[in-house]
Length: 88
Length: 118
Image 1: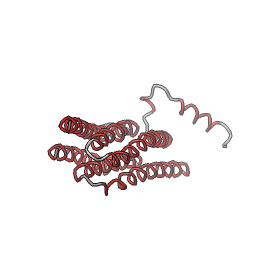
Image 2: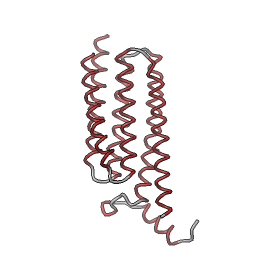
Image 3: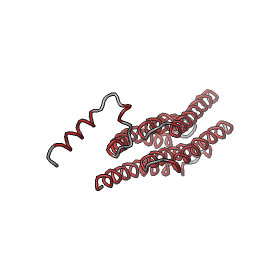
């Protein structure tokens, strides 16, 4: 099972690296918001893996909090961008 | 029984991670914001749900309930985020209008601009 955890972590890390490239490049701010949202969902996946690998539940609140913060953050940032464009 | 659970869990974990990676590749390679949103939502739902499922098979049931809660929350919120970010992308001109087949929002926005401000 530990091999499976290692391979899964490696795949998730590769995905996070690609998302980071998009985060740095993203031509408009919305691309960066989408990339951050995906990055946070990858963090939730990695925290779930940590729960399975260590067999202890101290990471479980982290899962919930990061998921909720990702949602609130993305929606708020999108709203702010919409309002900012409306001002021009 | 235990071996079967381990094999199932490994399949779920690896396919979820592979799906997350595919979504990240799509996020990197697609051309405009809405296409990237399409790739991103796949990572956020199917990739994450498969990994949560694989995790739930390995941990005690009381942890599995929290994982189920996260999964349900993700299923409810990702479409909402996608809709709001997509609408914002459209209104700020990040969408290539020439590639659209159906464009109901464009007609509505034109009516709004022509009519009295509300």
